[in-house]
Length: 326
Image (cartoon, rainbow, N blue to C red; front, top):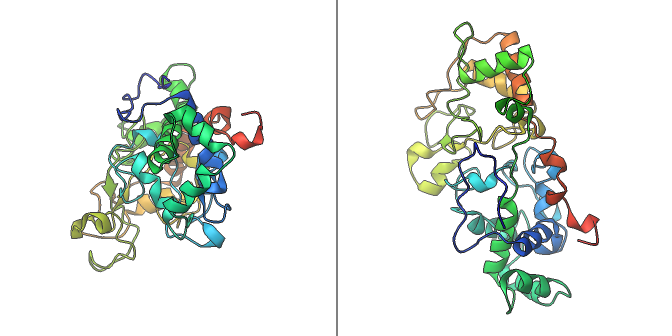
């Protein structure tokens, strides 16, 4: 199966051990939407990653099995196949295949075990045949579940926004959107620097790095309520650092930050305009900015051009159980 990628994206790195196939992607899509993955068949991947919200859930922090609250915001899965520096806000999973096990076995998410899940799948009236079509004969295995879900998620490519149309000279920005574009990328001498484009590089609108963006008022590096990347690496200087998320579809993915503390894009822009809180490991690009209210409105207008209405309605990514023939 050939992945449909825009020519201005760096080609996705597909693991040699998990090439995309029609059968594998279709199986992964079913698994993604099937609550059978959870201990009580109440929670699916799609419970926290809704297509109409660019595969986020609209909550500050996600809720899982029995309504249990997590600790972090559900990050968008748009273009997740291009995140080669680790998954999740803290980068704890090296690949999409490895990522799968975390929500399935986390007591606050799906609360299942691999032993029980494989028992259920192998005794299911439909899944064994689908796994055989995708991976060959034999019992359903953990590796197959991981590979199928990873294959489907790699197809979640978002590149149909107004920004993309302008990039391809098929559309034009409004005057306000164009000012916002130049503010974002610090590309016009008569406008102040907004410092956005240093961390949110196009076309993915992320540099895939982990940064402290000054949202916590702490006395020292040991005082962050959520250590973020530091909990994974063990390095003190990584405490309080989180993934730089993609801004594609950002108008659809509120609330914002790893803990969902900001409800609106205006609150996000206001935060960055102030320069945030001091910390020795805060990103150098997060500093007080000379932005007035018009500049902020222009930036937000540009951010709205990153919304991909085709992506959030694409039937290839939708719930297959709503069409019983699939």
